[in-house]
Image 1 (cartoon, helix red, strand yellow):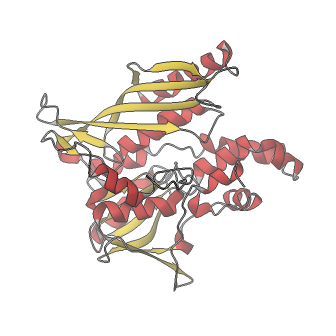
Image 2: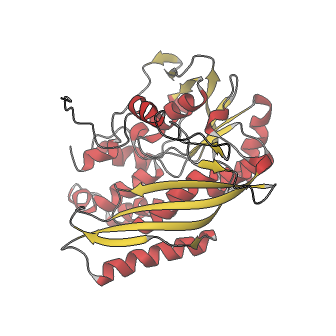
Amino acid sequence: MHSFSSLPAGKVPAPLLARLLADLPVDDPQLLLGPAVGADAAVIDVGRDPELLWVAKSDPITFATDEIGYYAVNVCANDLAVTGAQPRFYLPTLLLPAGQTDAALVEHIFHQIGAVCRQLGIVVAGGHSEITPAVNQVVVAGTLLGEVARTKVVASQGAQVGDAVLLAGTIPVEGVSIIAREMRQALLKRGWSPAELDQAADYLYTPGISVLQPARLAAAEGLVTAMHDPTEGGIATGLQELATAANVGLTINLDAIPIPAVATHLCAAFDLDPLGVIASGALLATARPEAVAQLQRLWQDHGWSATVIGQVTADHNDVRALRNGRPVAFPSFAADEITKLWNP
């Protein structure tokens, strides 16, 4: 008999996931980068072009309901971008709740997916849509294919001891948008103005949740050793995944992580730690010390803040934190803090 212990909402815990992945059939010479904790996408040599490799990623959207099609495409595109890839073909699966779905809702989501795919130069190559009692809200799970030059592939496993750890953008951009959109009525009752909430909701677009530009710029110039897209679990989980992927340690200055005032205030309204809130819209990267200044200039020239937040160390899978220059416990989250909005 198996003892039953309920897992928290969110990602499967990393130790369990690593054990499960180790038992899957992943050995194939054409699979250059396969499933692993901290790996954003698969890299496959299909053997048709000596200069190009294919990159593939699947990801669902389960937290957001408003503008879910926009989230779905961009989150997959981010995971491809951190390998240096250009997204090409998208295949979404739409699961729509029975008894709550009409034609207007389906048309709205299709329009969202189509609009962002046109914006990013992505072709919708197929997919599936279904109305089902198995879900109580809309779920979009998509697979995105892209391509990358063989010589420009970046993997999250590439971080090296002595590298600087950088963050492009601020956190938690996606979290700010979700809180403002999903909890608007509650926030209005607490005294937030419609204008404030409109601005926060617009974080979805400005600064936006896409990191396609800074990721592809960094990869094209060969300035990074690794990149990672911090999503569910926030930047804290993203940093831990980055360390796990490369089997290195990190020392992170928590005071250096840029968090806008609106993010701090929205998270505080629901007792959320911004370091553990879903963080699409920021890009984690590691770079050799001699490349840091050039990488920061490159990002800043294209409108991205570029902050050094730590260093890669030789302490395997050990992520350490500093506050006011003193060691503190590194924050860890069993589930994304955003889940407290629905399960306080």
